[in-house]
Image (cartoon, rainbow, N blue to C red; front, side, top):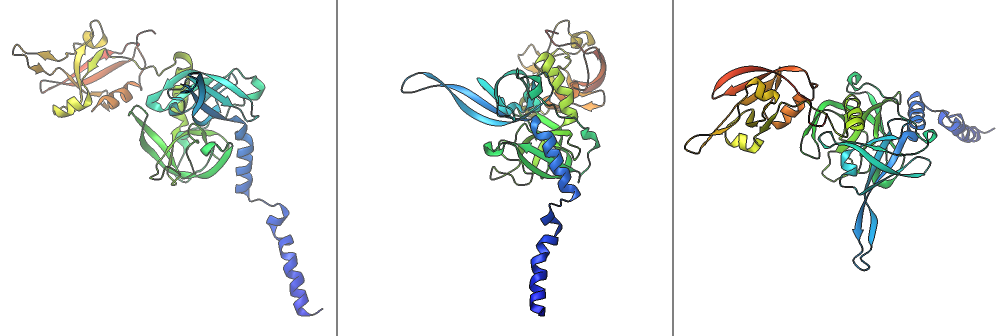
Length: 348
């Protein structure tokens, strides 16, 4: 056989001999496929609906206001998503992977963490909770996978790595969310509230927002770590909100404090009979000439600095009602340390 024919036959055989032509997949590809097949049934489509009045007929109509992603938290029908996905919703609908639709009740919200818990009355056989991992084990470079509904395209998978840890982002009510995961897995509008997974298919974060001048993915996405989510979701299920112990004070706005040169949390008023009252904290007062005399300024709770309202709230989240703490305060330029026992919020 002439050499040119031998070459032609050899070239024809190459695609058949190539491993990809035989359905071969790398270990990493097999892992990606397995994680998606395991986790995608747990991911849901969240539709935020509002009621509007038809300008022609004046009838009330229910129209979609926005959409996002969520995932099954438990077989009891609890769904976790972002607060901003369901904010101001008059009605929320959940679409499961089998395309069945279920009205959802908003069980609890935490705007300061951009988290919300919903509940559907779907049969247990339709509800597959995700296994939860430990975001404390993450290191930069770990493989991650995101599943969501970007731009309304359901069950979309993207992959990437942990790009950074310990980031801070701003919540819908301007509180800081700390220790956030940064990833380059493509996250677009509609991915919000969906799961960020590790290579074991375990939940390690809730995809929350992107940094993008164009509004689409630019390779910088953020996810709330699962360890934060695990501490908050049970409170939202039980109480409908995050439960923080209270001191019993009204505080000055941060802007006023900054304008007054205050570095700390300025107390305006102390509630009678509160932990603050029993510890001897003092609020602001008026002098006999009508000017405001600053009261105590809280600069730390135990070892946690409280330079503003956000840091005070973050510090209180580390404690439970009944815990005893030491407040570092400034009173008319003099440093003091006062011990008090934190109380439960009203209604508990």
